[in-house]
Image 1: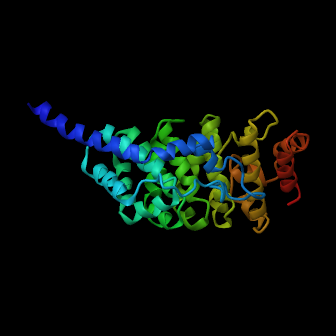
Image 2: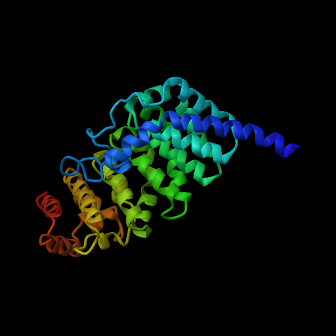
Length: 319
């Protein structure tokens, strides 16, 4: 009897989800026709100029469409997410909200329906897949500047989740993607200061996918002069390994952008004073001090076949 009573609400919730999924099916058709999905929106490249923040591009946004879910559908979906403890239903509801948030009109509607706080509460869920889907939804919603003002309250929790998540896990990736969007402007950089050692640890220990995503965050942070001292004092013994001709091009290019940003900012400081404040494994000594190994790496990279890589090397050498 108890199981039968419990199954009925779940079946009703799943039925509602199916209806809402059908209402948003046009989005999936558009994404398949566009041929890119999330990759097309997130901006895999380093940005429009040398050292530019890594984040969502200004073009190639999904069109406004009559296939987007209306406010009533979104309200039902948010209420369903708020009222259920079933991880399966939570996960599917978050996926639907995440897909809906790819449309700018829905980003505003979800915020106005208090959906950001409902999704944000899912970050406290102990089920990693639910937390991951909540991060994905917030990531899409963070493409909206007004939404970022509300999402910022979760930044420190997201930083903790990245640190405690399994290395290279989908949960860790989702958190880093959200921080990439939230760090495109310098407004929220101060909330990530304590996580800089964690980011650099992931840069040393993570796989290529993790390294690329961490570097997107670090490039954004390093473009802000106010973050320079916090980054320079951090320890990362294996940092030089990223500056090699055989390294994945996306990793190498972003690592060079990271170094170029720091080098530019250090030029405005008293380098002798900075030198005395850092030990030999610090980012400063590795990249900005009198480092013969780094200079040798840069000299070798001047012969790299990729034009953008060579441009970043020249940028470092001429600052």
